[in-house]
Length: 252
Length: 229
Image (cartoon, chains in turn orange, blue):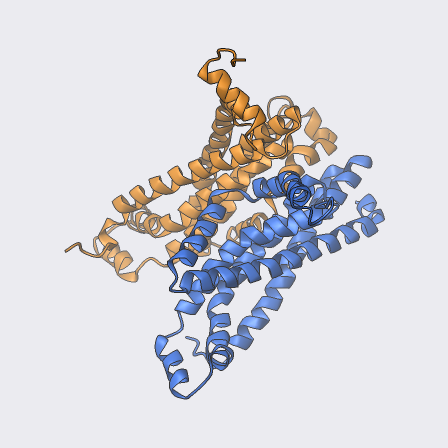
């Protein structure tokens, strides 16, 4: 008796279904879903980092110079967002806001506040703004006195001094901490899958549920996150080379 | 808001589960952290490579993914192993075990870096001085390494602990009846999810504030005799 002719692809499917502990061909069949999931993960992570970062710069300046009236509320804001889990913050906005009738009746309800995507974006942005504000504040406070004095001696106005000297110098010092924050944000984005969105983990959970599997979806999700983190940290290393090049020991 | 007060027993029991989970994971992570740090500092290339693989794996993968893998996949692997070797019967990994296991595993990697840095910060000369006084390795650890290591490790340890407490919220996703799970169930049944979620946030803030006080006390104790500027 001879084996019937079959293509290499069919052979792979056969091995995957019968001999391999992981049904890898099933994952290959649904790889497009995982790619879309990665897009959603990256989209929300990148957008919230962008928005959070833009919000954080003025807040950090206020905190660093302890401007009256504003410092206290901003401290409360960062304390609140840094002291509580992102998951619960997301639940609060996505499930919680619907409790109030005036929210449901408002013009923001239909397009924004009833959508999981927007709620996630809002929460994530506020969350990362809280963290970024605090380490940026540290970086601004650590600006060497000499740099500020040199700027003043050149006759720079306070605004120009901030824009030309303090902020660029603080951004450089905050860069290593920021790379941690970016990776942390990517890790935290798994919260998306708990509010019905199909991010990487969401797709993994969907695959496992649909085919009644125990680990294929999660292991694939793990690999996807691993690759993303690898690329992000690679990018930051290059970025640091550009921005912090003057701090590197001289090569012999 | 009254309904939150009505459900206080449920929230309190959930808080208790959350605290137990956090403390259990902390203990596991400290153990793994010690093991990882000594593996990294040992002059054995195999142990170094293993510990490095461990820390890079954890840095690359979100905790919830590991938790689900352990909870849904680990169970199957464990029982397959059991039925193949015949060593144990069907074992169920419950949510609590999966939570402690995965959170402990993840934060063990961060603790590894914390402890490694703290041990490296101790001047080598002090340990040599101990040896020359005829101290045994155990005495050196107890008298020289440990007290200073705690001091160097505390800031980073505090940070890890605060992140760990927040990570416990994720266990509600795999169905452990912790604070978040209880509160969202109650919130849905009385149709006041905002009030209940807000209560959860406040409880988390209280927990972190309490541990802040405790850790500051520890910091003062172990920094006694250090010149403050």
